[in-house]
Structure formats: C-alpha cells, structure tokens
Length: 135
Image (cartoon, rainbow, N blue to C red):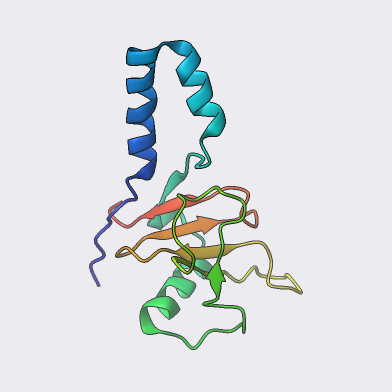
C-alpha cells in the first residue's frame, strides 16, 4: 500500500507569523508571540525507524482493527498541547505494544483526520514525531 504524507501546516504558519511579527513590530512582538503559542514543535520520524510493534499498530488502523486494547481508537484530546490544536474528536490514539510491559506501556500512535497523519510517541505524549512514510 502506498501512503501519501500530507503534513500539518500549523507549525509552518506559526513560524511565518513569528517572522512577520519580528519584521513589522520588532523583537518585543516576537517574545509575546512565542509566549502565547500553544502549539509546540513536532519532530518527524521515518517509518523505517519505528519499532516493529508500531508497524503492527498501523496495519491494524488501516484494517479497522481488531485492536488488542479497549482504549484503542478513543479520542485523543491533546491536553498536553504538543500536537497542532484542532477541534475535539480530530485525533484518536492507539496502543503500540511494549514487549515485556505488564501494562499498555507508554508508546502510542495518534492519528489525525488528514490522510496518513500519524504521530508516534514513545514517552506517553511528552513528545511526538510525525511519521514520514516516504523514507
């Protein structure tokens, strides 16, 4: 299956707004813009660098399940404000099994509504990487 990556544009627009504010209003405006920004930068990861269990989870998502945990597929509310801000119900989370863990562990795939907008976290939502299927 060929996946087409459509990355979120919010972080790019935020950077453009910061540069524009610096040019038009000076450094004080940039400090104010930076302090009020609720969207943190999201990294990226090549799909080939994901653990094998993440690929298993992505296959389950593509196939619509069945999922091993009852929490899989629930709405991810983005309370940490690490991912781009979206309306409620935009994101859904899925467990990435952690070998040897007696619980669900800390690894997740969080999907957005855009085509193949998949984020991987290995640290229970502290950081996210947008999965790049082109590498």
